[in-house]
Length: 271
Image 1 (cartoon, rainbow, N blue to C red):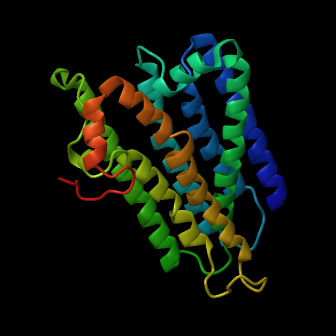
Image 2: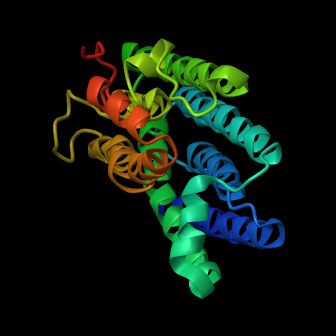
């Protein structure tokens, strides 16, 4: 399968799975399922472009990148699945959209989820660029990319576990989680999520070939992943709606937390 055809197939998978996500939320009135479907859709699309595209890349690199995106997808997807299945109320981000959009919520959510599918195509392209870089397999770049992805998944898992423990503690009701990784960043889970997408440019970019056609110029397309993820998390669907909700529900406690804690990149807390 050519690169173009595999990306088209992955795009159709993304669109179809987000349609399914819309149907599930309509039946359950729990829009958090959209994030579950999106996580698994990216993983499935990544497997398609990594393993079903013909090219000059060594099979070891294609399999390595496929394993990386599959590992990321399973970890994140099942984490959100467990959280959504046990939730007693709708994800506050989607709950706010339900109030804001009113009677047009279902139509606008359908379009919103298709936009998410379109954004997912950019992430899939990053996976493709890494999986199909020609050259000897299991190079230093391959190992560095794999190591960075593992660090990011472990870091995100630690942040998620710390937040779950805080939420489960009855004495923390009405407070803000500001311990562990959450003392250094208001959104350490988002930071590590973004960090993992830097693994693909590390593998994909052939610095010896430069920007010219003589090298693997497609490798530079892998920068789409971290750039897109940063924009989504920091400026669109991540931090802005979540912090707006936290300001409403936690008030001055969250304002104090904002004043002393970095929003995204982990930094020592300010006094």
